[in-house]
Amino acid sequence: MQSEVKHFCRVNDNLSLIVEDLGMRQRGLEHETQTMRDKLGAQEIEKKRFKKDVVETINHCIGDFKKLKKGVIRLHKVWVL
Image 1 (tube, one colour):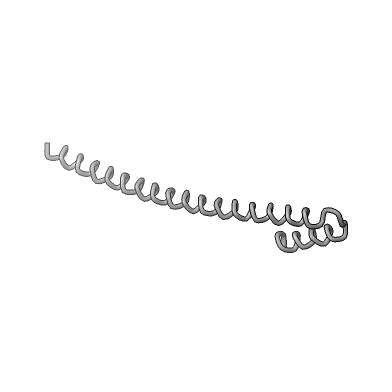
Image 2 (cartoon, helix red, strand yellow; image 1 turned 120 degrees about the horizontal axis):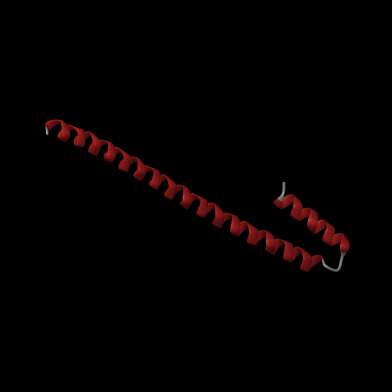
């Protein structure tokens, strides 16, 4: 009987450690998920800004090839480099 109590105490201690470890993993994954959501939101904002810049460049320079070329070069310098 005494050995069973010791055995179940050890099992209980091990299960407590497992639960604690899983809780830490869950908190880490929740933090990583939030970080990824933040990055995704920032990328979405950048994508909208780029799209707006492209539309403005096209609308401003659509009739003049040289202006359009300069506008595209400017876009390339701003967004790629």
